[in-house]
Amino acid sequence: MAQAAGQSASTAAAKVLGTIQSLDGNNFIVKSDEGAEVHVAAQDATRFLQVNPGQTDLKQAVPIHLQDLQTADRVLVRGSTSPDKKMTAATVIVMKKIDVEAKQQRERQDWQKRGIGGLVSAVDPASGDIMITVTALGAKTDVVVLTTKETVIRRYAPNSVRFDDARQSTLAEIKPGDQLRARGTRSDDGKHFTAEEVVSGTFRNIAGTITAIDAPTSTITVADGISKNTVQVKVTSASQLRKLPAPMAQRIALRLKGGSSQDGAPSAGGTGAAPTNAMAASASRGAAQEGMPGRGAGADLQQMLNRLPALKLTDFQKGDALMIVSTEGAAEEPVTAITVLGGVEPILAATPKGSKDMVLSPWSLSAPEGGG
Image 1 (cartoon, one colour):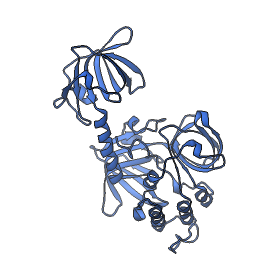
Image 2: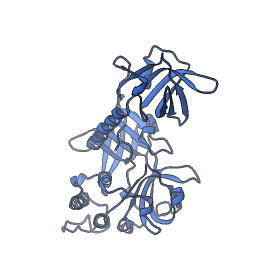
Image 3: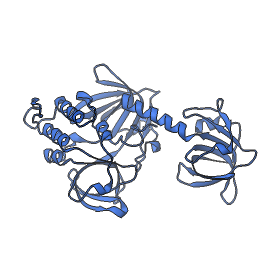
Image 4: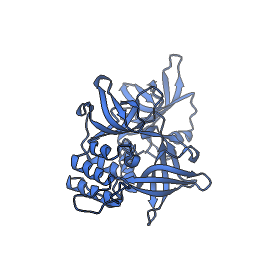
């Protein structure tokens, strides 16, 4: 939309990009992407133009009227600002809410169909290659993500769980330990992935038991077995709360310990070695038995979690074991939960040292699971 605005012949003293919060006659309030509320007044001479998501110029824009605007529409307003900070609109470029949602749904499906995610282990700026470790229900695979000059690279904001807040970035900002997800095409042997789009971020993984729940502030306190510290976690409306069914958690734990599945599959070594793809296959079969389609040895734990019923903070209690992925957070401030997974007691018992073999993915909210 901003690119489209650059093609407009009008020259404005002020502009705001955001979402319509309310409408009242010729006036409407826009919440800018920076978080400010801007009061906008339309005049008889104000031009209203509708563009489709992804459209980069105004050549195919369709003229509409003030009456066509609705709350939650995306708008770019160009005009002038008065001393009282109210804005008079000269041009209003509109993306209808329904069109944005349709685009997000298409992208959500494409991210799930052609997406890959994992932990960054190495970055080669010269070649544009990124090595990631993909964990599919405990089974680890190294994949080289290939980027080009055409690859779109984005990065999560430090304290945001929204994909929409991810900003344009560069390969230089990606570092080992980051979580990364890419959309594109995987090679036949599965070892290389040609990326059309990459999004990365620094996230935190927490695994431990709840020591306190503060419902009024939507905050839980967790004794983290990974960092060995007590962590305060803020749960928001955007946080994904799920709980593993006991049979699934037990199967995953069994494979993490190098045991055998219920169907008698051989162990991953019988000595506590890293689990093999047999574990992923076993857990995938278990998911299918519980009404969640499996995806074979390459099963994606996050996709399974997406099919589990959504929970509320009140569904958890003191003493419950959790695995959490959160924002990195600032010092002495609660981190913001992205995914909270309960029912993991068997898994934590199988990895008493806080093993990162079962790292959760942060890609569970507006996108890449939810589109751009």
